[in-house]
Image (cartoon, rainbow, N blue to C red; front, side):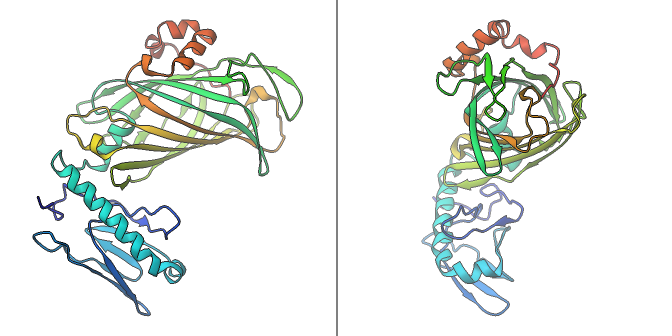
Length: 362
């Protein structure tokens, strides 16, 4: 079976991507099977494809002004990168191209690779109405200069409910339940000794939400101006998907400044999430709830309850987790610890989505 590489159903055009050299990640999304021979002149370099054994030749790709264009995809590199790594990059580009061509061929029978909007909605949310559950776990650390100090374990469960509108937009009710666990015992903290001040402080369970986020048909979030009773300024940048073989990665970045009453400076948040899924799963037209895992990193200011005052530094988290279909699919250890800390929520977690929004007090 010959894959129709000219068909827009087999590859999804994306904005400009950065072409990294061997030894780093290469986001050569959208390339198909090519062996490239590169030559460089003063102003121009060319890429000449080696013909494959397919029944018809593939269209040629060209490389002009150090900007590689193939099937409507554009990847760029600066001249220093070209000079130091072009020869080795031929092998790397060829390998990635062949892997992606193989993926396109593999999935052509199951269905076309979905557009970036549908792919991300399946990966991050779901394309029909219903519930979503995410779990995350990893260290929360204090950072002063380059020094990281683990202070406790963040164990997070998030309950979300998706409701779509006829125009393709949707809203998501969300409740984030964060447990602070002892680094050694793994049990919920009732008190915490601040390693920077020596002060022992009570630890209170403080859920985030429930709140309702609204998204346009293209998945762009309608940014809120309040969160938990506090004014907020925020921005979100969802990058185009990177596809290598059957692996799909989507990088989602967000920034926020929350102007909490009684706090001199706003509480600042910088989040980075990398969602990972299977192209076979996300390309299946019968799949509305894509399988997904996530790596999450966060940098914030000190939380108010820590009594850090104007001391320099910040908090950072490095968490990993996954999306699941049911509350019962969340880690049993997390569910049992939530029952210790918040028994009413644990008894009926779905009903908690309709509670009054908790006050933002970070």
